[in-house]
Length: 137
Image (cartoon, rainbow, N blue to C red; front, top):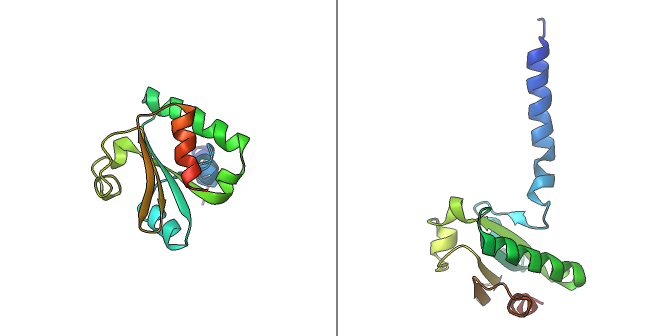
């Protein structure tokens, strides 16, 4: 069977996309939400920081800058918590959002076991976000 250059290019492009997918999922230090990922981490006894955000949301981008700066300045956060990003546009009407009563994008919560330890809705100040992250330590 003769292979054409076109089919080889498709194969290489597809393989590259699959091979690089895990890197992009963790590029900003967050696990991209898929159904079950939060429950699995909680079942393992982990504390979970959940960021409900949208790529187009200015408030979300500001929160992300603050979160990343705090994580860079104190490695204890990464040791103590699993950081999960929930795409608002995909999951706003799904159980992961509705069950917890998440009112809008730019909502941050910290979970441990069956408990919600804290929440920030649309807050962007370093003191608010640090206070929430400190609850997860």
